[in-house]
Structure formats: structure tokens, C-alpha cells
Amino acid sequence: MYRKWPANICPIGSSRKLACIALALLAAASLAAPAGTGAAPPRLLDASLSQAGRRLIFTVRTSEPVVLKRLERRPSGVASRFLCMELHRQARGGSRRLCLGGAPNSHRGAGLELLNARGQVTKSKTIAARLRRPDPDELVLALLPADAGLLPRRYRWRVVVDSDCRHAGNCEESLPAQGERLFRLRPVRAVGCTGGSAGLLTNGPRERKVVALTFDDGPSDYTSGFLDVLRRERVPGTFFEIGQEIDGREATLRRILREGDEIGNHTSHHTEYPGYADIAPTTSLIESATHFRPCLFRPPGGAVDSSVIAAAAADGMRTVTWDVDPADWSNPGSAAVYNRVVDAVQPGSIVLMHDGGGDRAGTLAALPRIIDTLRARGYRFATVTELLGERMLYRPYG
Image (tube, one colour):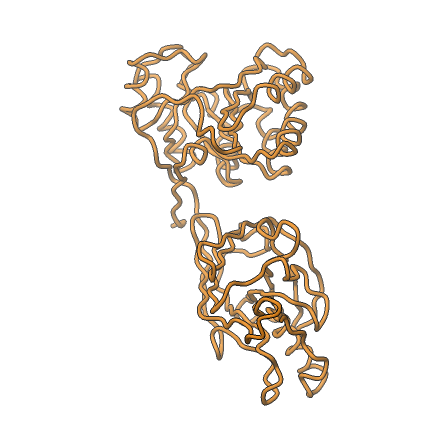
């Protein structure tokens, strides 16, 4: 059964005892065997820390499956049951601890604890993260480093678990067994995406409740407001940009990518049935401003034929339209935009809205309600590239 940490496991001075507690708390009963088996707690077999694009990936493998719902995401005492990874900057006091589990929703979110140089918890909260179990004895945590307050630099890290603490006064098992491992978190930027082949798509897969919110005709003075909403709601969006609107708004394009959103090409002058000459210059403008080369093209008005698809493909882009259109370009009011979107959305939908080309206050006002309603109905959100099963490409700066 799960074991608690006895209060007398560290018969040492108070300052060293706090440090021992801070380490042993990292996994106390999280790695314990299922109740009633009488077996010893599962052991840490391996752990790794890596970077995949913008995300930090923490992987841990144990001798037996870990029961996530019995872990405490934000441990509060010596009897807590949890599994955590601890990181700290070189030559700096204090550390950050990322803790798995918690019930309910153990697969969405992680605990973050800040520890001072004496091992005392000074602050704790839950942050956004995704936890997967590729195999019964393997856990993979993915999160954005900024959500954990981790900036690009070098870190020392290790995983520590309670290993019964009654043998020879040893109150932890750690990986590595001695010392710490080194990891360099690098700054990256989006440089492209996969899937930019010839073809036309109006929606993504229908078997999953995932939708893509898209915004046309920018960048504009309204775009920053849309980005504020998406960031606050932790929702990605895809922005199809017009080349003639980019001059003077390059910083807005960079912000779009920096916050995890996507940029697509929407021609140079919003011309229907455009040729290559009205498509390729916008790709060049986007790439010059951001280092990002789009893989998605959206034809103005949805006007598309084989020549448009071929012209976009010649510039390395797939043509994407939509299956939900609230006609917000006509300014019907925020209530109408909201109702038209939520009434029409289905799994895999690509939703058309506008952040440029006119007064977009009504669409902006409707956006938070749209997100809240769809989320309450069990929908998740993705960029168009992610919705279509492709991925963004990142490269370290420099």
C-alpha cells in the first residue's frame, strides 16, 4: 500500500531537515504500489528532460505504473504523496518544482512550487500542462517553460522520490543517484510548418472535438485585442494576413508567433482568384518580418479553383477555407456572431472570423463567449496546422 513519510525519518538539524523534506516530498507515495499488493514501491528507472519546439518535455519511467490520482499536485506536508522534478539555476539559491498528478484532471495541469535556498516552499500554484502515459510505466509531462517561470538559460535538475527513508537514515531516492543533470533551455522561434502541399481543405478530422479559430484581413489595429483574448483564454488562433497591411505592423506578426499562434497567407491585395504574383510577395513579407514561412493559404472570399490551388502550392502552401462562417464582415453585432458560430461548430470545424478589413469590435466582443461556450461543450482549440495533423517547425535563435 502507499507509504507515508514518518515524521522522524530525518534525525538531523532543522535546516538540513528542511532540505531533506523538500527533496523527499518529491515523490513520496506517488511511486508506491497499488493498495493491497504488499509489494515495495515502484522504483525510478529513468528520467529525461528535453525541449520540443516551444515546449519542455519531462519523461519518467518507473518499475511499475504510477497511480496518478493518488498524487498531490501541490504537496503540503511530510505525509504528502507526489512525484516532482526539481530545477534550479546554476550558482543561484532556490529552485522550482514541477509535480505530477492530482485528482481530478490529473492529465491536465501540473503543480508548481517555488522553494527558497533553505528548501522552504514560498509559493505554489497549478499551471497548464499535458500529461500522457505512452506506456503503463512511463509518464510524459509537456508544458510551456514560461508558464513555470523558466527562462532560456542553463539549469540543474533531478527527480527525487521517497524510498522508504527507514534504511540507514536515507530519506530519498533520486535520479541521478548523486549530483544533478544539466539542461539548457534554448530560445526558439517558429520558422515554418509541415503540410504545405497542393490541396484544398475546409475542415479537419471529424472524430475529435477540436476546432480552429481563424482570423482574416489583418494585421490591423484590432489584432492586438484579439491576441489579448487568445492569450488570456490560452487558445491558439490562425491569422491569415494581407500583404498590403503588414507595413508598420511587423511587431504584431512577431507577437502572433511568439504567443503560439499561426500566420497564413491571404494574398497581397485581397484579390479573388489570385495568381502566383499576388500570393508569393506576401509570403516574402511575412518571412522577412518574422523568419516564419507560412504553409497555409486562404483565398479571399473563399473563391477557389484549380489554378488558385496550384498557385498556392507553387509557393509551398496548402489552400484552406472554412466550414463555419458567421458573416462577421457585415458587422451583424456580437450576439449574432456568437450565435452563428456556436450553432454551427462541429468536431474538426475551421471557423472564419475577421480581425481586419473594417470595424471588428463586434467580433472581438463575441470571441470570449465563443471560447467559453465551446470549451464548456468539451471542445479543444488548435491552430489550423495542428488541427490537420501537421506541426509547427521551430529553430533556436542565432
